[in-house]
Length: 406
Length: 64
Image (cartoon, rainbow over all chains, first blue to last red; front, side, top):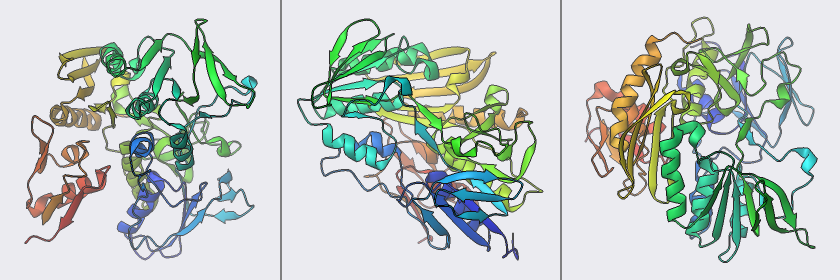
């Protein structure tokens, strides 16, 4: 696009998706005014290392700042959360009262950790959730050898924190409500594999139970928990890894269908509660619910790093040429490193009705599983066999682009 | 064009292989192998691969 120097595009969210969108807009030739709004004071930084290297690196947490390429020429409004959107007036309002008019707006506000229900009261000291850089720094300071760590939730984040705790020499208890870690997203074979990784590394994995009550001593610091099965666990530090919720509460009253993520069409245009396109508003990343061809077009917020990247680039292109929108053409993928085992996935294992174990070698810590829905491939996951994924990914890509998406 | 991968940074995430399988692949031990001077026709895919690397291990430059 050229010669459109008067347009003002606003990106709400200054993390991976927001930065990537800004970069794409300029790379595609956008010459107008560009504003990036961020709730945190930090310039864009990367989150995946926060549950991994940032907790265990010997020299202190690594710098996870994302490089901001030259030529972005954006006005950065950091430390100023957006609080309201009025699509009719085409304005977004920030917490400090600033009102920004826009010609195009991208919602890229990410997700926030799920917390304990408010009726449980304030948690004891040394109970953490882990999402931003401050969380990681504060948690790391408490992970000292000899302490006992309780991790509530054995999804990827919880499992990674447990692995970090073991690597640092802490006693670790992991509490998981399901029958196995990761079962909902990756099935029982992978769940059993990950359960074995935890137990082999000396973590005490308790399944089919929850942390019902957190206990504290006279100084207000955590001392332990009573579990749903009536047993108790002593702990000095706890991490609540209960999943993430798209950060879209600020869109209440805007008319957008934003419950559990901004619902989009496959061109990343935001939809209202009647399913109509909201002119000028787009969404990407953890805050977006995007139709998934591999799940029959069902809109889903996946929260994966690579999806944030792909969606942001596509949304930026659509913002520039709303009349010839760009359809999202990406295969979801995610990864995790647990106790040195490399877990990699493509597609949507969680959408499958059948998992086929192609290889399972507990000793060599290698695994290959393909996932199917009504007999058709929808995903694959490997441990220590990343080389096998490219072929699956190609097939999933072919399927994604030939099956109509919602 | 010339491709360089910092193997001290590479964590075998596979994103480059997904973006440009003609240029990047893994051996059986999960070490990345790649074509350091790929055909210019693959530039788009290689740029995508570099952008998709979570640890930013891939750099691109002009052919030597």
